[in-house]
Image 1 (cartoon, rainbow, N blue to C red):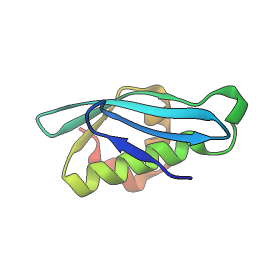
Image 2 (image 1 turned 45 degrees about the vertical axis):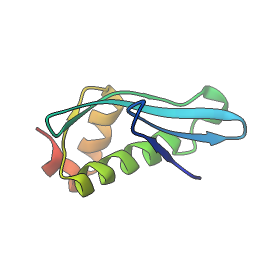
Image 3 (image 1 turned 30 degrees about the horizontal axis):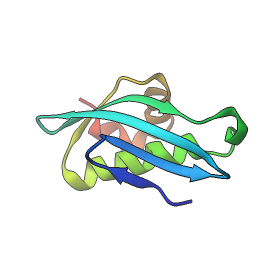
Image 4 (image 1 turned 120 degrees about the vertical axis):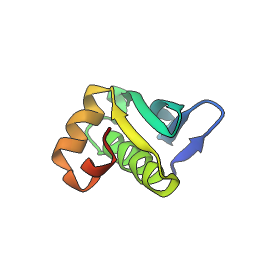
Length: 89
């Protein structure tokens, strides 16, 4: 699965079987606020939201950004993956 980082739209997205999964964020002063993670039901349950979130967090780490998990999915993901907890503001 290819994940695209669209910096202009502040979004990570992927296409699977004709459906689009997305992770939206806001970036301000080096802080990425993850605001929404969405995967259509037709492709749900395959770890796509997790892949998008992991990719976003890895991007934040590489860029030196901190993270605010404003989206409930992102917050749960970080709780379950403490290796990313150092990014949280």
